[in-house]
Image 1: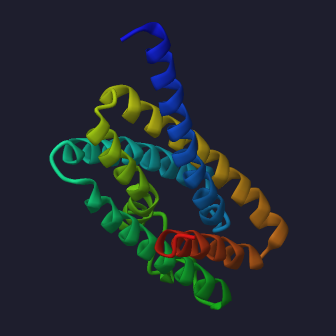
Image 2: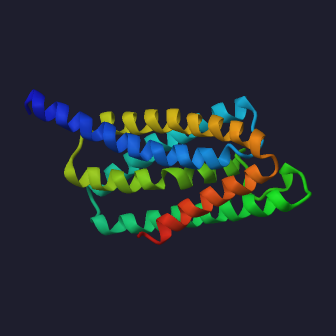
Length: 188
């Protein structure tokens, strides 16, 4: 492989990583409208980065053995999880209960579900990269790194916007997550 081909492959992987990271940014923007502490934002970003490292790796390994048709299932699961999270955020924004009453919060198992829903698209990308034989370590490092950085940016921006919007911020955040879930389930 020549230098030109190597640079082309790296640029392609960076563009894919940015695209996956923008998804994490937009979802982080929605999740950031919940009142989060900076420590929580830090852990959420790390977790999303780790999932964007693990899920494409799994996808690459499976993609080397399974046909491309399996990727549609991951998209539907991710869309359903985002719909559930979005609906729950909108409902809880209008309820008088505490934040601890939420079904899904960005803590513990809720953080696991959120990171999983954000990273399922990277699993699908990993499937296709596995089929085409991309550089595994470079791809998963770039996916994890850009997703973590862009998730932090979205969470911090969402936190700032939440202060301006008050109680409507969480409803807006839930609407963003709901719309992202619909986009995955109903590709246009």
